[in-house]
Length: 312
Image (cartoon, rainbow, N blue to C red):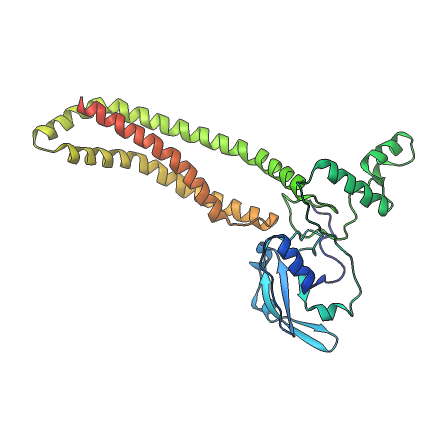
């Protein structure tokens, strides 16, 4: 969670257009352009959703010039204290010559994949530069009684933004290492839930399939009568399909209607507090596709077994 009072920097955070485009190029994004009296706003998707019309009419005063908003960009841009906290104002290069740097960020592309050893080495250099202890040095100082438990300093960031629930905040990032760690954390939370949901679905449709196949003997006589009355095999298969579809569709529709409310609300809340891409509806659609795929497999197996029992 984020400490109260550290969400934003004391001043608005600006970046000149050339630096912004250089970072966009590292991300594989197209460069942007600004008119002489224009600025752009880089922010998070969840924050942009809350914008009112007043944001788009907001002017920025820079000395003798007044800038109008050109466009809002919402690509993932490390805005939990690195490139601004939640938002970043992009202005033409010439205006930055008269500004005093607030803080600086260094970004570099690696020829090879980043490693944990590289991350540890960079962290050590960074901490020594700012006169703070690494974690190993802190533990050694604790054993010698030279420091207290409250003296550990996790980071130097003056602001963290307002993302919550799942957010990584640090002064130093190595993408290959930190992305893998974040994916592991998210997977460790979501996989058990997905596994439990899959088990429930399999149990439910197994019971439904067993029930329908058990009843197929009772329906054999009825379908035999229809066959003797002249119903063709193709028409009989169509009737069987509709009968089973009704038995499978009713519980599936009820479950989807109930879960839609819960999943969409939970998904939207997750997006709001984490800044993740997508929406509750997107997550519900993905879950529905997975559950629907399992459901169709069981339906297909039941349909084939029911036809075979009826035709014997």
